[in-house]
Image (cartoon, rainbow, N blue to C red; front, top):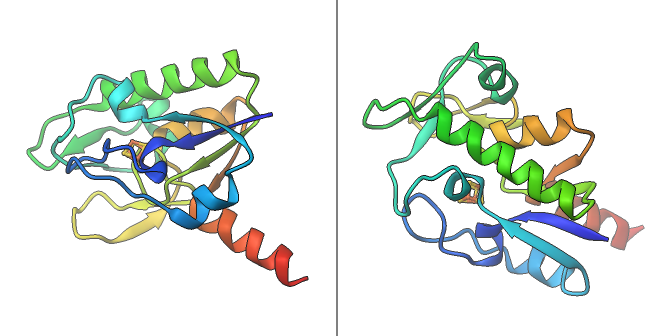
Length: 158
Ligand code: SF4
């Protein structure tokens, strides 16, 4: 069974600043698994590097419902890129019959249960990123990299 993983967690340089979020412990834990590495923001047509963006009011499900929007630090509305990236990620996950995704915590696309609050001050609020919300809406389980590792460590100690 294939697992969808945020590409930056496996060292792909798709992060907004041109770097990555390599999580060596995660790559080690998944070394026997088949993984599909995707970056929703790149899929949505955004360049790398790019200006960082945050969801303003609400969270990912509100963006999908048209009640909220994604603004980058230059004040540009890039909501459509985020929605397009989420839809393409879902489409690719469905082709591979994926039912588990491990995504990067806090991101406005990939965040799980917590995202940056829209003030560009590194503050978090409750909620999912846009891609996470769409995957969950389509019955794909989503867990953050941090929670996946915590769970694995808990299992090992039991
Ligand atoms: S959109 Fe997701 S995969 Fe792409 S850089 Fe951000 S957290 Fe990583």
